[in-house]
Length: 518
Image (cartoon, rainbow, N blue to C red; front, top):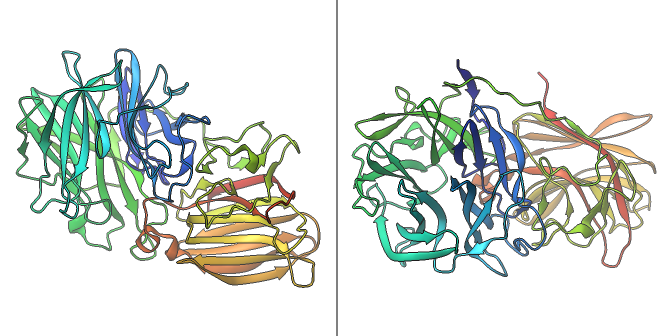
């Protein structure tokens, strides 16, 4: 029996995937950067259909994301299973408190994870775990060589898992497969057919990204470079190819002995622009003469992949959140940089998401009153019902389409010059705000919407009796990482702000998101 995967298998910003199989079940962790809850976890039984089961970091005090930049925070987790438990290592970048590499454990990925155990003796970033056949544990990592402009080396030390301490000597395993290698990182180590196989990401995470491999008969090396490196890349397909930046792969073997890889790549549209960020793609892997071959006969990521497993689909996500639960559905919604309970309530007005009019804005490194969900489709529609009365021109509430503090779009209800409410469309590009449209409103509830057709984001408002009116259309290419920089994709959702000391709020009755029809 087989099931057909359509790439990407996890659409939207789910980069740096790490996968592990336990019995018939597959679990996947990915990077989350400045968003909270952090380190999203997914579960599958066929490598095709994935359902969210929680986050490794989901409670206050577990890890401090305060003040991290938009593409700082949580980088490249590695998820593994040993001795009946799940173990995860990861890097916190730019943390104002503890920062660096850390270890977490759990009996069940969908349950509670431990507080981070910090590994101060582990330098650099992109840590990885390897458990050998004899039960010994190792930690791998990547560190930059000073003064080399991105040259790195992959190191390894023994790991006392119970104590959370590194043991034994520091060994350098590899310094990159390619000539003048840059950013050899994201190491994953496997034992296959008597070989220790070291899989790396090289070339950075943009167009030059690639998967490379080396191997050794001994875990400590020396590791020989595969003469066919890189074993997968899209760099040679040109900058107009619709899938770019393929790399950062992790391998998994099915009970039937078939091998697959999960990796990141970006879909380009509207020119070389990837608004959706780095998504999770699937590839088939076979072994030839002790080396992995990715998508044999193709040598690139394909739109569809046949997987030798029976199909195990999950119920589809509901397109509308009616905010009827007492807590935010974190399978959908993220906050910036922490739980920040002062930003919202789901109980003060039952059936509504209430956002506080806080002075914190999307342009700052705080936790604004913003509940964001990933943009997961090139063409989509989103709409919400807002009940909000601005008390002054400083009060504003509506929806935001966010890339980072310097690049985002807001459609906000606020007080106009004459005192009555208006809806204002503002584009923030490279830190400069420009109003792209404004319409008068009557007091009372209003529906706000955004629909994307490629790179055209059209914003609308609706009140009776006029019905829906377009406020304006913004060219969204500046929301791509190629323009805005960074590692994340676009998030969108309810957003509110107001003056310091204010007590106002905005209520959202529901929020709908889905792919555009037709």
